[in-house]
Length: 394
Image (cartoon, rainbow, N blue to C red; front, side):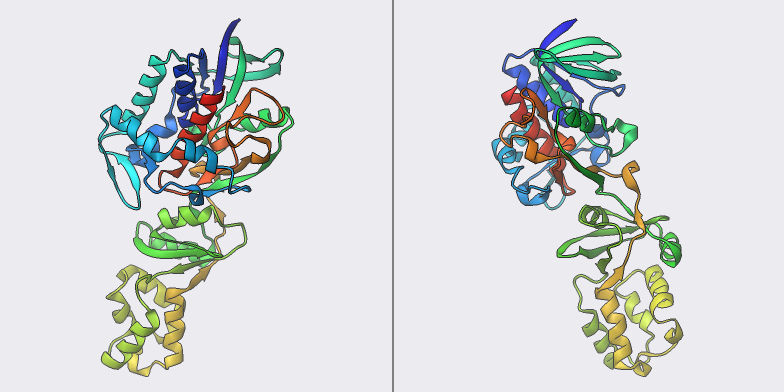
């Protein structure tokens, strides 16, 4: 049986960062991955270009039952630290929008960089390794499909339940519970909405249409692109708000975020009295969308010129354009979710080291923890930051 200073379960973003950091401190490190290759989420992220961090990464971009928990790790390993590592490896990158940084070339460069750092630090990596059980006996004893291993410290970087085809599993939650830690309820985050009935049929007809909106749920709102799909709604706006939405709640969509729709239709009634309402709206919205909204909101008045609309009727349509309230049927679930909300309760972890308060030398990092970032590189930054602080402590 081989012994190591540190064994890390999960060779995703957080696990790789933790492994290289611990290895650079002279620790002997074994990194175990159940999938056939490491860093699958890194490779597919950002359309294959990896949105590896965000220039504006700060605690306010994260959701957790304890919003203060992420502050320590994010301040000890910042976006600037990771950018410096990217630049050290000569990887060209660009800012896409709102501080989102992407590789100019390929996400493979980020994975290659992390693997090069791990190799230099002497980290041993095993793939296709299924974990059967973990026992505590003067450290940690692991039974796996590739044999038995022992380590003084164990780091759980197994990710969440999102996108199971990339290796998502509940092993991290089970290990937390095994050692007396609380695991908070989990749900899919950064995920498309599904619709039902007439709204689903309408969305299906509009499938592929994208437009800028402001989407809100409660007091939270995002100005981003919305995309109609065959099943419902997607796009950055929807993914963002989905993390704040709960089943049964309604959302509000402003289809004209830069325009006061009431002002628009009032002016049109005065200046284009013979025009149809759809003609007026075709100037500011996609024709296909206006056709669907007409059937939804003013079917009886479709052929009525603007002059014949009562002001109250026009203002009713205008209100819906800026404040379209609808209730999603649900989400597409973990199959397409980018993150898992909830997870290992931060109350049971040290915010400075990510070490368990119930079992010394046991650490939890990355997505398995109840810290989830917004869309735009924030979840990768949490992986780098939490992985780094654990790597400094093991």
